[in-house]
Length: 172
Ligand code: NI
Image (cartoon, rainbow, N blue to C red; front, side):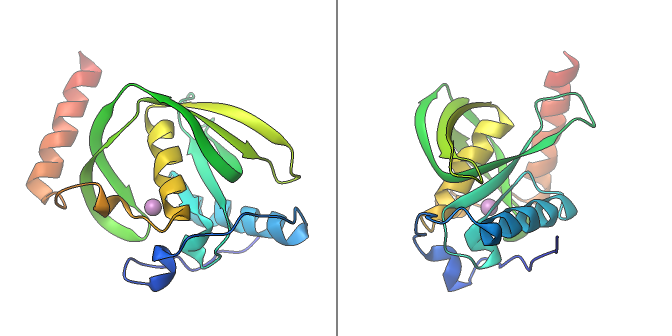
């Protein structure tokens, strides 16, 4: 496994439409391993192949709706959101734009259909942050950043107000 360089917003690669993965070989496995390591090292909850310069439809997402310490990496090859319901609005960020967050509306629940690293098809449900990450990472595969879905980047004060509000809701 190896860390890969994460491209930053402004790099043209992040605006490109990615091609489907057609070969489920050692090279793909290496890419997915490297993406997971790179995401975890950067404390992210999702990373798409174009963010490491590979224009193929593959993403990794960290499932965080589990007890602390039991988070695990989900690999989605050629993912498609096949169902969505509910709505959530909250601060969203991206490893290609570190330290910046904007308010983005996403479905609260999504179902994704994808292939695993060996080409087997499966369906998976995502809730809350995981649903947000599935949508955000799929957007990357079509060359889109979250900044296209929010009207401004939150100031430090706005971001603090949001995290205070969330903490309050959690303790209620
Ligand atoms: Ni991103």
